[in-house]
Amino acid sequence: MILTTTNTLEGFKIIEYKGIVSGIGVNLQKQTLSFSIKKYNLAIAEGMEAAKELAFKNLEKNANDLNVGAVVGIKVDIELTASNFVIVSITGTAVNFA
Image (cartoon, rainbow, N blue to C red):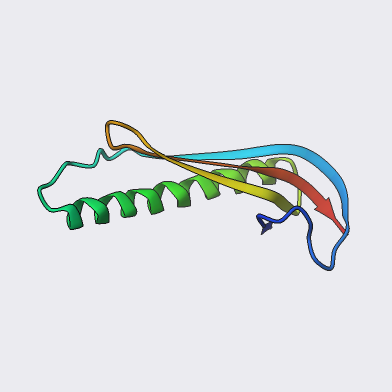
């Protein structure tokens, strides 16, 4: 499976557009506030990474369900809620190519 932020696949021709796919990842472990800004920032970064990995796994699963070879035009949106939960949403266009 090819995942790319570009709208084309260099060296290939997109032959079929199957629709928009998405993947969402949420870091359910609430980050605790700390008096150490360094520890707080590290915890937020780790939460973002975990949520991003989960979102990409979900995106790839949803794309595989459409039986495609690639997802192009990927956009990643990361949100930190007021409760310090990290939410990552990824969208792209599922395509087949030759």
